[in-house]
Each structure stands twice: as structure tokens, then as C-alpha cells.
Image (cartoon, rainbow, N blue to C red; front, side):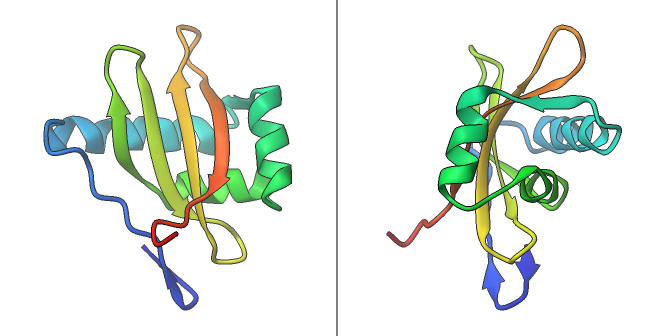
Length: 112
């Protein structure tokens, strides 16, 4: 992904099927685009600590790609671009009720 002068990289797990990851990110992005998501208190606190707000989380998911999955827990790490161009990492899952639950948010600095 390219935004401004930064590049956010998201390389999917080798063990995960590329087609499954593509359909899952599309599903997550569609739910977010339709407003069917929420942040946990922890995610909200962590986002604020790194200077992100709800709009950065939305943008990160909508521009993001799945980098890591936890199949047993049904969780996904999405890496995308925040509105200011920083790379944002978002761990989320799709609930049984069909919403995206954002579990945590952080500035993704792979070089650090």
C-alpha cells in the first residue's frame, strides 16, 4: 500500500490460502464501509495512545491487507494506512452477529 511517502507492507501468512484471505479482507472492509464495526475499550485506548482516532482505524481497514491470521481464535491482523500516512495495525475478528470487533490498534513500525 502506498500513501504519501510511506509504504505499509502486509504479507499474508504462507500457510493461509490467498483466496480465503482476499475474501475475508473484502468481508471485513464491506462491514466497516457499512458501519458494522466497533472498537473495544482496549482498542480505543491503544489507538488514542498512538495518536489514532476512529477515522484512522476505518482508513486502515479500508486500505489494508491481512498480514496475519489466528484461525483458532478467528482473529486477523490488518495493516493499512492511517489518514496521516502512518502505518496502522489493527487486530480484529468478525462476531457471530456479523460485526467487526476491533480488538487492538497500534502504529505498525516493522523496522523498530
